[in-house]
Length: 618
Image (cartoon, rainbow, N blue to C red; front, side):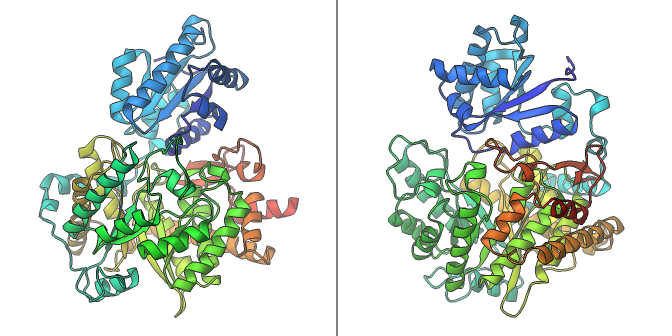
């Protein structure tokens, strides 16, 4: 395979209707760690590649390639496989005809495609071996090797393996091979009087399950893809009723569409939906809630008019808990029209409203920083800041989400250190009027497209969840079960139910093996304890420095300033309009299985030292 030129520049483009960017940012992160320049196409180019038959659109793509001096062009699309093949092959042929590929004298040394396995198969059928395809199950090292990165330039930390991860993998392989999970039956979660009524609530279910020792509460995300809105709603109604009959799922998360989140109640004619359940009226939400009984229901927050939509979710769904992303789902990630400051103001206004209802809040925060290259300390600190803000404005019950495997090449021992540190710091905020429930889940891009491998991975990550607090049989209180088909296709009810059975059965089996001394007891692992102690001290010192330096830290303005000034680094956030240069200026890299901020020579910069550097330049 031809190795990369030392001056290679990678360009990544995806059609605008596909909001998935995690795979691209991961690849960009890896390549930059190896010393290669990487750029993502702006919104204008993302819109153009949807229809390159328009000559102006093709010109935009070519100008971007020339201006950025791109030599390696990657295209990603993770929605409909037929559309993916059509978009990509049309781009391929036009670039070929225009003489832009290296074999015709152009600058593009190679063009590659990343998408669902079915899409990769269609592309290979059309173009053969001329195109390199990525199906999603490649390890980071495999990805870099396929892209031609020389062995001498591969990050040493990526090549190393960790014994704890190997142990969990062996456990998971044996467990899935045994098929014990097929015998899993529903747990006792429905015996309280209010269950399935209009007076049901997450707190009532939590109290019942805790008293009957039947935790965890299970949450899953569901929603079909269908371009016909009415057909999509009808299909989803069938899914919801099937899941309700299974009695395996406690909390149904509606996989609502981007238009539902950004344009609820508006005329959608001619606007791309981008996947998800296209709910567009209060009556449709009420119908979903009725079909879901005895499940509890939750859904995404809006990306504009956030307080009004939260109130609508209350009266139509009796929503189990609300979720807000604070800095995210706005202008900086293309998911909504709000500026970051407007978003923070709307979200804190919404928190006041949620507090008045007595419902819990889930800050959907730390993993969004991790998606964009933030270090492990920032992951923890951002969770603490969101939790303390929630408490300040009246929230009484916090759902603390911990997305593991983010990035997916993080070692398990580091995930444990992150999870324990975050939990320790956030629980330090608890009072008689403020309680915290841990919710764990697998990473968004964790699963392989090989479904049998993915089942093993689901059992592996379940073991990881249990090892955050291995001495606590009630932890985690909530598991967000990500279905094993995630990398291939949307999960249907049978796949969701099977994924829940795998999760619950793996949890029971792992605990049994620990009791019998047949697997390591991670509560006594020295490496994890040392990592946790170091990360806790680093985060506590940094939080103290922020609180002393910003009197208004837990306000929209304070939270905005620390983001804008670079205290919460997001080096792989596409800041196409250069609005947040300080947020993107810091470099991060994998070190000893975790993510650290490093200087130009690769040396780790401790968080408090970096904060002082920022404060000094003010």
